[in-house]
Image 1 (cartoon, rainbow, N blue to C red):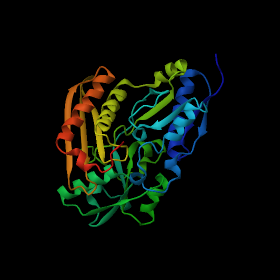
Image 2 (tube, helix red, strand yellow):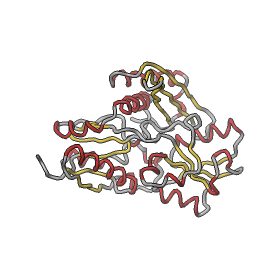
Image 3 (cartoon, rainbow, N blue to C red):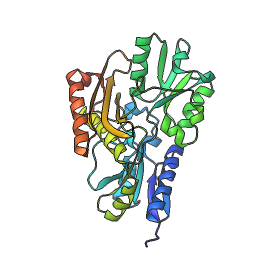
Image 4 (cartoon, helix red, strand yellow):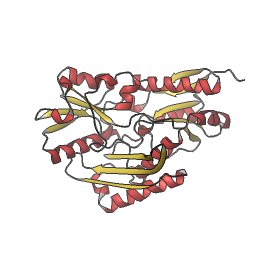
Length: 319
């Protein structure tokens, strides 16, 4: 048996290191080989601009992919929502493990819920998608809030609330769970209020396309239900020609009858960041048996959304 350590490329952030560490342990179990973390700094980590300004798409993954293609690491772990929808030549998505909670959450002062925030409350988020949906909800439910663009890691964002600069911040439940801070959440946002980013809560394990043995080993960590769900969501994003930072939300639910999964529902939303205009649609059908069927579901819903004017609401369009 090959006992040489596998090299896992990861971003340096606390969250990236935590989720890469979890994957490293799982890979060690299935391969019997040690896994060492190789820290790589990405443009998204060093830039102080807001994600919408630097284009969002790929800013956290390009350096990792370059290291893979140069053979400096054997595989890499990404947050799937950060991954561009186009798969680069020479690399393969070897596994999408079981997804964590895809919802967004609020961390607010005084343990407040979203709907209990005071008039004029300032809510921090670096995501046009979150701003669009929070503002749209506020408009239709008579809430008086102001969304404020922010950058920084989880610690930095929560500190804005602790220091009194903001009344609340919006974060991903999965990220807080992975770094052991889920107990700081003051409100879980229903997906009926805010649809998550395509792929949110899921991880992507990527490696070189010519490493058949490693692909087979990593494939043992793949969850078929998660994979078809995120494939449909990302297909919708791709068909809208929208980047990772565009105000697009999508979620594919697997609908069960007892213990048997019968159908998949795909929901999508596009909106202006001020919440004044949104296009939100859904479609339900049999659980896709192939990735091509999942992709078709995403394309079909995207076509319906584009027919209702979604393109004019997105701002950034991916080239």
